[in-house]
Image 1 (cartoon, one colour):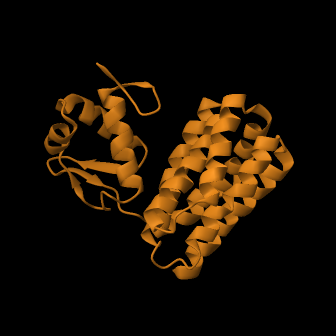
Image 2: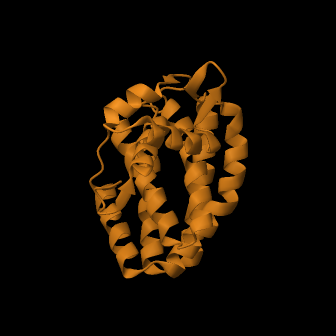
Image 3: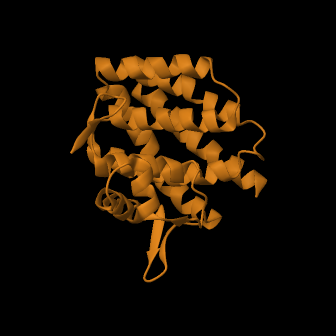
Length: 216
């Protein structure tokens, strides 16, 4: 069975459950350490337990949930010690993705990125809205690389980084400024300027790491 997503994509129930749960876990709507009841989730989604279980298996492989025999499934804890490991990967791959997106983005990709620039100009100050917009910007750049392996890898690492970010939104002095850094990055990608996009992406990842370290 497939359903029509807001984007017009045909999604299976398992994919629908996966995307919904993934974003709830990333944005900490499901709190770290919180138990996950597949029966309750299936009821809330309005379909059977099998798609939810498939989604949870994927999320476990992405380190967003953990399953314990005879205990159940839980949202993973956010381990700040992972920041350096996550940043090490992102420092290498984010600039590569930004440059690739600048070179490979299609007309449709550039239209999506241009729309995000407009949203960034009108950004709201609520932390949840800012973080959701931040996540959409990253995913749009990854999609514009047209490299599914690079895209999948970076989505997973950005999800883990975003969970850390969401843990500290109330203590970060300039969350809106951090999210606004995406405007020149997006403009460089749209303009096809790979070198500038790569440099801006590297600076953005470095700023993220420094900002978190500053509030620890």
